[in-house]
Each structure stands twice: as structure tokens, then as C-alpha cells.
Image (cartoon, rainbow, N blue to C red; front, side, top):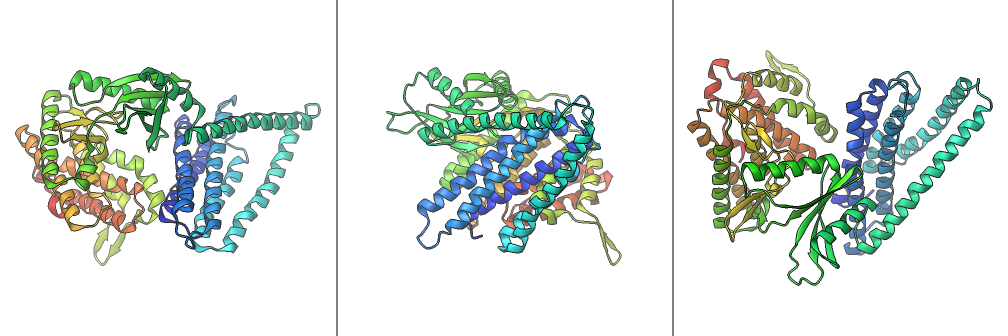
Length: 541
């Protein structure tokens, strides 16, 4: 299949996510874990967003692709595959909800469902190879799995009939149940049709709950006619849109509309309110918050200015310098204002372990084993992380400060006109070790996928500038293990960031930097922990 890079990449991510969902369902069947159950349900919005990116990419290619270069059949196949993959994840969610009705959570532990699901897992694993290699034999293998499943399901069905043999006409009872299920699905399809009609009318994907929330938001703004533009989609399934008045010729947003899971948006609401109490002026104002079933919607003040990424990539050097100075001074002021004696570690290695599977789903070659080369032992990534975690146990920060929690470049707004810094996307804000924010900021600079020397030098300057400022703050506050804790944070961020990067060259350089950092930490004698230093300039070149 010949696909544009953006479609290919999003299809790759969707395949990885689908296989992850199926694997999680396998784990749920064996363990009946409530945590695994919730993990599956929480990812529903992400697969939908990935499917829509594939669909939008196909449409964009059809509209703007050069005649003769567009392979319509590949685009149709990509669009169909994306929809089918999302349907598989939907069925995973349905299985979770059905299991919630069991009289005992582990009632399916010894059932045949895991064997059936393993065949699905096998089929999904073949899909990417079949796409990459245009191999009809692999495609046939995937199709043959359906026959295997049919035969296996027939055996399972008969087994269930025997279980129900004490009932009168168990076949009728089962058939009635299946018919009821199909009718219920008809209702789901009707809902989908209604959402498709709304989407066509509004010119963007639209869920019915989102439509209701948008109507309320427009009412809160006093708008009868408005333009709504999708700005971003998050991994948790939230969607972010800009709202502007239809008759406003400046095209400026009046507010930002954000909707998604109620738990996520409630966290953001509470974090914003905390910022207003702890350090007023940094967070945007919340204009309204509405709940709708399991979902919620936030209407947020639109902040003028540029994201830090836009500053680095688009503005003149003097604007970059002013932005860095203002950011550093803002952070220093926040840290001094919120500094507490309570020690709250970032637990960088625990964070890395939690996200490592997602990284390996995209970059399986990062999973290395311990080997011996002559007399030298090269330890595995898992062992490096485990050893670093042991060292981290004795590295509590001497104090904690209120941090952003997701300090990426696109979550920092600089207004060149007023020379102000604002923070957005604050749902992870809390009191913690400030190396969390610094390490995330530094790596979010490095991972920008631009190659020209001038911009790369800017990126390096940005990362080093904030590192230097934070190091000076640490020195003045007698934080003697700052460099080592920051190194742990950098290793974590270098590796975990690669799960969003398909460029093998960039991902590999980030991975190797993380491994180098972990090796430096492992090699550092305990007595020299306070003297630990990394060659930061080389790492960010």
C-alpha cells in the first residue's frame, strides 16, 4: 500500500494502540483487575482521534494530491482499516462493560475467551507487515483467522448449550439475547447517523454530547452565531476548539472550548483554581464548567500570545531571548513563592517503567538484553532502569515547589507585546520536585523535528538556558543532588518522548542519550553523588 507519511504514521499508531487494547483485555480475562478494566475504558477517545486523523489525511490527499500520484485504492483501504481497528477497540470496551455485570469478577478466568482473543492478537500482528510488504499471502493469513474463529466459536457455543441444558429451550433464550443485542446496536447506529448529520452541518467531527456542551458554551458567551475551529486533540480523548464570533473579521478567538472525560477536566479545573490561589496571573480564567453524564466541558479564557514552540521556530532572536528571560524569572518567582519543606520526589524511574510498554510498542528494538563483550558486561535497559530506581530511592529533594506537571513547549504562552508568561493544560499541576518540569522542558526542546543549524542552535540555547537558571536556583537553596535528580528526569523524558516519534533517527539518538545518562548514573560512586554532573551541552547538541 502506497500511503502519504502522515496517514502511514497515524495508521501505525492506531495499530499499536489496538494491539495494546487487545493485550489489556487478555490480561483482564486472566486477572479481573479493576485497574486494567479502567485502563481499557480510558483509551476510547484516543483510538477515535487516530481514526479521524487517518480519514482526514485520506480526504486531504484526495483534495490536494497531484494527479497521478494519488493511489485511491490504498487510501480507501487505509480508511477502512482505520474504521475496523477502532471497531475492534470498541468491542474491547463492550467486553469490559459486559464483564462488569458478572456475579464474580473472575468468572471468565477459565473460559475459552482468552484463546479466541489470542487469535485476534495474532491477526493484528500480521496487519502492518501485510501493509508494508503488499503481501497477498499475509493478507490471506489474516482472512483465514476468521475461519479459525468461526470453528472455535462454534465449539464454544455448543459448550454453552450444554451448560444451559437444564433450562427449557436454551437455544431460544440465547437467540433472544443475541437478537436483543443486535437491536441495541441498531440504536447505536442511529446515534452514529445523527452525529454524522451534525458533523456534516458543522464541518467537523461531532459527538452528540459535545454538540450539547457546545450549545451551552455559546449561550454562556452570548453568541447566536459562532465559528468553531478544532485546535487540537489529546491522547485522553479530549478535543480542544477555538470559538470566535462569525462577524469578527479579525479571526480572533473569544474563548477556548475543551471537552472530554469528566475526571480529566475536573482535574484541570481544580489545578487552575489552585494556581489562582497559589500564584495568581499565570493560569487562564475558567469561564464555565459543565457536566454531561460521564463527560464535561470547560470554557477557558483565550490567552493572547505564542506558544514557546512558535517563539523558537518563528520569531527573531531578540524575541526568543526575551521569552527565555521572562520564563526563567517567572519560574524563579513561582518556586520562591511556593517552596515547602515537605519532600515530594518525582519518582522519575517509576514514571519511566509505567510508560515503557507504550514506548516499546512503537520502538521494540529499544528492548535490549544483557550481553558480555569479552570481559565487559553490557547490561539491559531494564537493569539500567532498575539500578537507577534503587539510587533514586535515596535522592529525595530537599524541598518541593508547585510545578506545572506537563511543562512542554506548547503549554507555555509568551505574549511579546506585554512581556508575560502564561501556563495552559494544567491538569497535572501539584507540589513536587522541580526537576520534573525542567527535564520535560529540556527534552521537549530537543525533540522538535527541525534540522537546520540555526534553529537547532536556538533549541540547544533554550534548553541550556533554563538548565543554567535552575542549577543556580539549586545552588542558592542548598539543593546538592539537583544534577543527579535532573539526570534521572532527562533519561525518563528522552525515552518516554520517543513513543510520539516515528523518525527512527531522532528516536534512536534520544534513546541512546537516555542510555548514556543511565550508565553515568550507574557508574557514579555513592560518595560522589553530590558532585555528579552530565555533559549537558554535548547531550543537547
